[in-house]
Image (tube, rainbow, N blue to C red):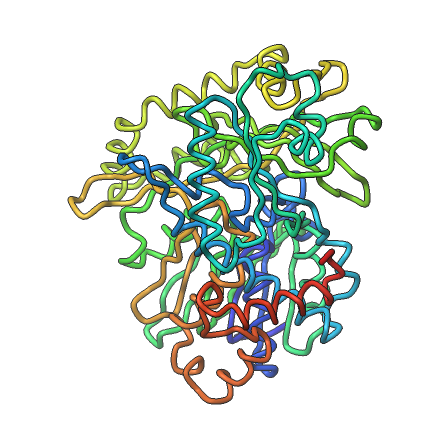
Length: 493
């Protein structure tokens, strides 16, 4: 037990695991304590069943390339996310090279990424997206086709039974990946738990946190098994508790956290139980989200590997919930409402009624209605081959805009105190896939002096060979790190 650790990490998801591992590599003598409410690591958003697992690299996610009013397609966000994912690959390769984690095939494998659309307007959109992306280094390998035969070779289930006169189009990236973030997260914690100066506690909940006059944070932690309570002080707190981050951020009472609210969204999958069908699909096929749908509900027919077994999922089906965590309370949303965020939350709620209506309708869907959605991507799907599985919870960010009103924001955001003594991560997708870049941003913000030091700069360039370089603007460096990560992570070239 560290009486007064240098760092406290709250939550055992991919963010805390990444930050803890980075800090231990940069400063081996650092002391860290980790607290998790559940009895094992990574049971919420990072777990394979709760996470899309795409290895979000923008190869197939159409919501990262919005169409502008003039008809052009904005590819800037896709490029940014693709660069971030390449940074994640470098970090994971470093962990394997240093034997900090073993057997990369337990958490990452090559699965082609495809986008698929139908209808004349959507075909035109996908062609523009393809043309915009392939001008850039990170997307030069992408293929585009309107040929039924070629698309069938990429995704036979999607084309089987489809009207041959229907206008369709698809893109294809062979070097896409499937990532089991639950396994990856647990592997990093296995490394951290055996390091000197690191203590990890399960079934422990941070009940209170308060800033002391000496600048440190006083935390009150409860053992949920024995009921025992303890206090500790620390110089830095990271709140990476997924849906549990907002309530703790509110308890911190930092000025920067005021005005933030959360909009929880639930999810479900259709899971294929017919092994013959599962064997016929080997891709992640993403389509366009329905009008009014949140980004996390972009439909995809998704090959996954979970617990050592090939799986085929379709979804996710979004839904309305008041829980912030899968194992949370139905009172989570109500308890999060404070005087400083009630107006932004009410304003955002009033201006997102169509979204709320859509989510409630999704909850009420019957199996027949879900199958109708699936048949848009797999026309020959049979209801008896698919069962409904519960997915994870996501808490989208509500924050004040420049006019002081509330806006619903998708994505992730780091909220930190002005003195950099505490930081919380809010939001959702593409979170896990870009965790390394997000945690590097946190280090540059909250450990800025050390990050500027020659020692940490040198170490960062060992951990992330492309650190400080825009990969999309440097093809030689990109090709070098792509080759290295492909070999180290045992991926297909």
